[in-house]
Length: 393
View 1 (cartoon, rainbow, N blue to C red):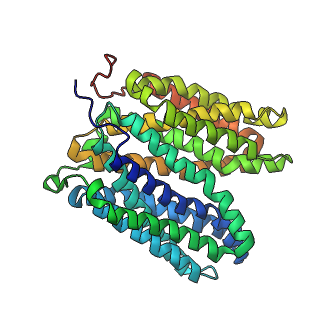
View 2 (view 1 turned 180 degrees about the horizontal axis):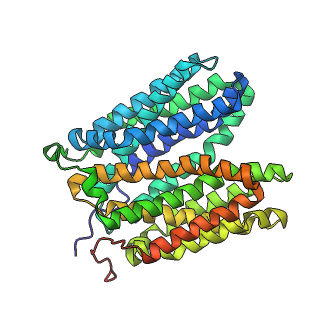
View 3 (view 1 turned 60 degrees about the vertical axis):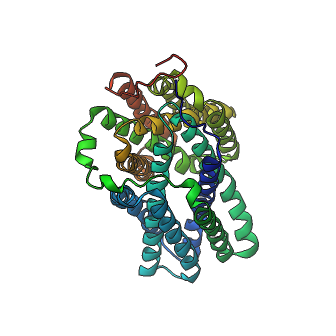
């Protein structure tokens, strides 16, 4: 049986280095709200400016998917990184809140949206169904490593040299990604799907009930993930505790599982892993307040880390199983837009819940939503590729 290309080859190593560099750029900007506060921005304006980036990436993603289908992945990825680089340099010119900050955030969001649309389509088209979970697991480890490493590094840079130096670090990461992409483009590129330019119809893709249920589950998972990322540190500080141990344990376990077990998802079934791992997410969320109160925070951190490390590649690979080869740009654009929407709802809706019900109850309430996601993957008509791997469907 033909098993498709090996995951670890020159093309995929280059792709992951580029992923790491681009997500390093984005991760440095996790500190951007602090810069806005130093500019004198009120809290409501900080929320608008920070959220505007995510809103632009979500709204533009379907158009970026169409662009990938017409032009191919590499040109769209390169254009996206150029936008990210230009925006990163422009931040150095912004010294007070105003319309130009929103324009910079829009350029940054459009660039990131183009990069995501092209890169996730590239992975989906490069690897067959029998290798996709492993491929997306390695991608997840690359971007999660950037998210874990760059904010602490950014804090050191800001403390010593100021925010302009932070933007310079972000720009250098984008420059490295751009140079690598331009130099290695021939090794990374796939045949353009230009001949299928009229084949992507988003309504038709959404009419596929299996794909629609994957998107619903993705929205739930991303919402829960965003709630933890945005509010665990706030909850910890409110009771005089540090969130450092929680994130160190969760990220370490996630990265380890992404690298070590993603291939098992391909072998034993993506839908099966969704059903197995959602309970870890439910339990991890529910136990967060108890974990901090009882000084056993490593327990919910480990549960949440397991969920992140296995639900991420399973959702990505399941989404990529849908649509024809020419439709992969559209499929992955809808998938990544849904994922980003979950991160927006996790920040906005969970913020409202925390305001109304207090932070202590936010995580148990969110665990109920995760339980809904569990029942969706239990009962939903989700299908995966029928390709057999090692004799197991």
